[in-house]
Length: 195
Image (cartoon, rainbow, N blue to C red; front, side, top):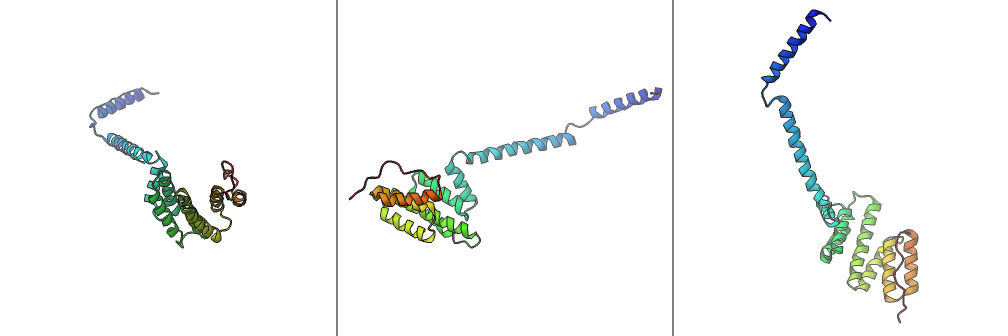
C-alpha cells in the first residue's frame, strides 16, 4: 500500500460522510421503504378481510357462491350449509338452482350428471326431514332411473324404507349404496317391521 492510498481512502470517506450528512430525509431509499410499508399494511388488511370468510362453512360457501354463481358445487354447498342452519327455503331454492345449472353444456357430462343427481338427492333429503316421504321417494326414484348406480339416492331410499319398516328393502338399498361407496355409515338403530 502506497502513501497516497491512505490519503485517498481518507478523502473518499470524508466526502462520503459529507454527502450522507447533506442528503435530504426523503431520499429515494426512504420512498421505497414507505412504499413497501404501505403495501405490507395493505396486504395485511386484505388478508385479514379474506380470513374472516373462512370462519364458518356458511360464510365460506356463501362467499364462494357469490364469486362463482354459475358453478354448481359452491351453490350446492351453500344450500347445504343453509339447510344445516335451518333455512330450508333457501336450501330448496339453491338445490333447484343447481339442477338448472347442471344443464350447462360447457360442463363435462359427468359433472352435469353428478350435479343434477346430487341436487335431486338433497331435495329428497329436505322432503324427508319435513316428513314428506312419498315426495322424497318419487324424487329418488327419478334420480335412480337416470343414474342407477348413484349411491346417495339408494342410501336415502334405504333411510326412508328403514323409517317406514320395510327392513328387507331398506337393507337392499343400503347394500347397493355401501357397495358403491363403502364410507357411508350403517343405519342407526334396529329396523322394526311395521304392518
